[in-house]
Image (cartoon, rainbow, N blue to C red; front, side, top):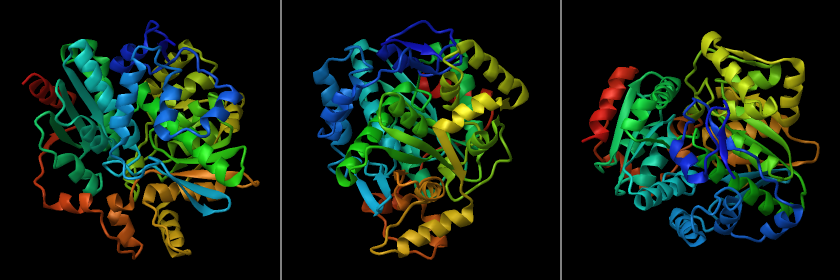
Amino acid sequence: MRYISTRGKVGKIGFVDAFLMGLGDDGGLLVPEEIPVVPAAKLKEWETLSYKELMLNIFSYYTNDEIPQDDLKAMAEASYSTFRDPEVTPVRKLSDSLYLLELFHGPTFAFKDIALQFMGQLYAYVAAKRNLQIHILGATSGDTGASAIEGVRGKEGIKICILHPHQKVSKVQELQMTTVQDDNVLNLSVHGNFDDCQGLIKELFADLDFKARNRLCAINSINFVRILAQTVYYFYAYFQVKKQTGAETVDFSVPTGNFGDIFAGYLAKRMGLPVRKLIIATNENNILERFIRGGLYKPGDFKTTYSPSMDIQVASNFERYLYYLFGENPAKVAELMEGFKREGKIEVGSDILSRAQSEFDAYGVDGDECLATIKKYYAQGQGYLLDPHSSCGVAAAERCGGDGVVCISLATAHPAKFDEAIRLCGIEQTFPDAIAKLFDKPQRQKVVNASLEEVARELETFYNA
């Protein structure tokens, strides 16, 4: 297995080098040269595996044995031993046709923990094996930052800086990042929105001299290993639902803003997982829905919503999908991305749009429907409390699913992380102890402007101290 760039100007590299490169040196995103297809007989064998065993089997297709199996197994064990549910990502039944994949049982109560706990272990492993100082740089709309920091805080040979939009994440998300006191952690609170933070990150990684001089590594979903780690729970969820329902084919509804989580589902489908439909669930920042409906990828006016982790207008991982949508044509992708940079939009013809519509459906959930869905499921039976992102997923599943096919909707965060929205529903929840204790801890962060020069100075000072 070798890794190449969506823009075609990165030579074929191995698993660890792809992990360390993060964003392709040509500005593209790294993808496997060929997506492996898992035989049906192998899928049958995987049905009885534990989550950790399944992860090791899936990763074996991608790592080229660059990491000894015992070392990989130890990293998987360390990554998931702290999760609050022994299944890591359990599945709950909401109705005969709708199941919920709970992805919030990790240390920061969000789905990002599943990939980032492992990536923290892998960065520490590679730093020790190669005698490297690793400097992680990432942007977050809320959950990635806390999960990434938790994965590497206090680890030898690693420093991490996370940019988040100032006062545009939930209070719990902010506290999870900024109450960490380890000296290898820096939080920059940026005046602007997530797209501003993400744009700064991409510019800094694209400056190859700055990247090399400061030994930058990526933790965002621009890093393919993050995508690969998230692919595992699609397989695991399918096997659990198949056991309960006998379903041979399922749909997935995925709350997504950056297209990373749903691209993991697309990768799983390309590997042979029997998925009929992938449903893109968005909020009012619905650039992805508008593309699937009409073939135009163009940012609209930024809106602050009840689901802030999806308040994104430019979806970084969409470039990976474009690579496959246009027949693995890097020259075409480079042309499209250059056009997007110049004109602020990508528009595709009817043949390409039909292909995208055959693989994805999409639905944008407005604020009223988001809150109404939370109230609806809390009032039913024993009552299930959805966070606002998971609510968007369920609402999209209700709108786009059906035809007798079971849908698995992804629950991406614990509701305690978004109490602002829960209280608007007239619901009073009890916080888990780990979250309740955050409110008594001192914060440490630096507020900066969305300025490349200002952020670069802060990074140089931090990484080289």
